[in-house]
Amino acid sequence: MDPHDLPPGGLNEKLGVQIVEASAERIVGTMPVEGNEQPYGLLHGGASIALAESLGSIGSALHAHPLGKIAVGVDINATHHRSARSGLVTGVATAIHRGRTSASYEVVVTNEDDKRLCTARITCALIDADRV
Image (cartoon, rainbow, N blue to C red; front, side, top):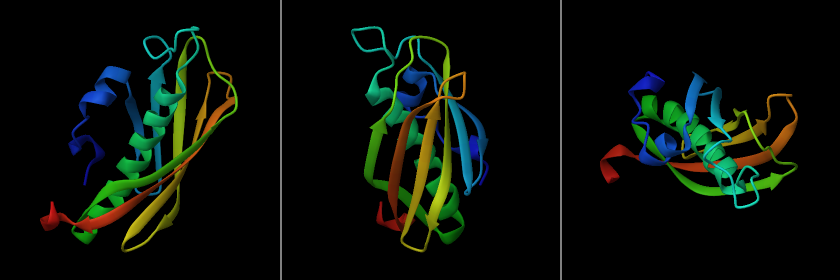
């Protein structure tokens, strides 16, 4: 399955998420800070989490597809280390478990200076495609 065959989804479009690299093992995406700030002008933590969930979900979907399954998120947690006021942030999701019934990814979001902004972990359940 080509990652470009996946529908972008309305939230990803609104956030400005761009997928740079995608495989079941590693997914890289970017997102602008502009338009994704909270009231104090800082990158919104929820935007970082949405980026992380998108990247982990794409990886899970790429893993699930050959198994005849689809991926649905069941858990996400995140720690915010610092924020950003401008530029692009980059998320790198790396598989930490790819099984028959679940997949988990660690996602590290960094700023343009490669400083860590957020660390997240997402787990997706892999369910039979005909159950949806």
